[in-house]
Length: 332
Image (cartoon, rainbow, N blue to C red; front, side):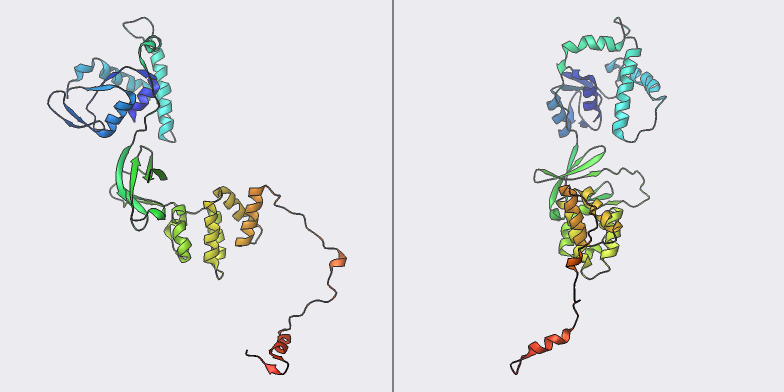
C-alpha cells in the first residue's frame, strides 16, 4: 500500500492530503469534487485520521511542482538499482534512497536541504498511528477438492473447510484465508501475466492430512503429497511396499500436527540412515529428540550369566496335545 508506506516513511503527517484519482481509491469520478471512494480506502483514511482531497482530472497544475519533482527524482533514484529478492527489500532500499536524496537536494525557498526543513516541520504535524493493515477482501467458497480460485490460480485450504465460505485477504505479496474469525492459512501470491499458459495449483500437503487419515490410499497418487520434503518421500517409498504401510505412513505424517515439522523430518532422516524405516523407530527417535535424550546409545554386551543353556525350538506339533486332552478331542 503506497500511501501507508509513505506515512510510515514520513512518520508524521497533516490532516489533509491531496491525491490523484487512482483506481485503488476512487471507484467513480463525479461532477466537480464528488468522488465514489471504495470502502478499504475510507477505512485507511479513518485509521490515519486525514481527509483526502482529490484533484480534478487532467489538472496537473493543482499540485504545483509535485509531478515535475517526482519525474526529476525518478531518474536520480533508479539509475543504480540493484536486484532485489522480494518486494520488501525493494521498498526498504527505496526508502533509504529517498532519505539520501532529501539530504542532497536544497529546499529552494528555505535555508538548508529538504531533510533539514523536514526536521523542523515535524513538530507541527500529527503523530503517526500503528501501520494500517492494507488488503483487498473477497468472499470465496472452497471447492470439494479444498481449493479456492484467484487470478487464474488455485490455492489449497485445510480439508475441514471444504464446501464452506471463507474470506480471502489479498496483499501484494501474499494471500491470507480467514474463516470463523481466525487465520486458516497463508499462501505466497503467484503473479503471472501470461494468458497463454494454464493457471497453477498451489498445494500445501498439510491441508490434506485429514483426508488421508480417512482414506490412506490417497497417498498413492495424491498430487498434494508430491511436494513433500525429500525425507518423507523416501520413507513413503519404503513403507508403501509393506502391508499396512499406507496407514503407518499417514500416522508418521500426522505427527507434524503435534510436533515441529523439522523435528519429525529429522527423526525420519535418522531412521532412514539407520536402515530401519518403520513407524515405531521414527516415533522412538522423535521422542528422544523432543525430550533431549541422547540418540546414539552405546552397544550393550550381555554378561555370560544371561546366556541361554538351551535354545528354544519352533515345534508347533506340541500344540496337538492340547486338542486331545483327557481322551476328548476339542474342535479345531
